[in-house]
Image 1 (cartoon, helix red, strand yellow):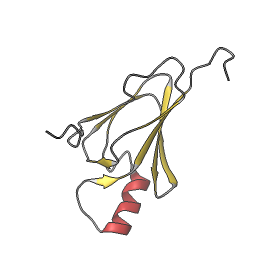
Image 2 (cartoon, rainbow, N blue to C red):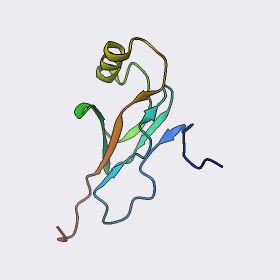
Image 3 (cartoon, rainbow, N blue to C red):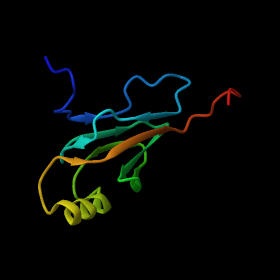
Amino acid sequence: MNTKKEDTKVIQWENPGSDDIIYRWHNDEIKWGTALVVREYEIAAFFRDGKLFDIFQPGRYILSTQNLPLLTRAYRAIMGYKETPFKADIIFVSQKIFQGKW
């Protein structure tokens, strides 16, 4: 049985710990229409080929060509127009204040 979450419908920081600062989403294949959940103390950054394309503030987003315009243009330029999936790294960064541990 394949336990990899290939057909993920929601991307979010799973089980953040109180001391966690950064989290990389485990699956880099993203489909249009997937929901992105960014909690109030986080931001989410989209990277492709080592370049930062978009940053999402707290909220819930449905990933589409409207809210990922730079990544969409890059994807179309490199791969030609195809629906999905496209590859991108999603990095969540905590914006919490840590109590003198760092």
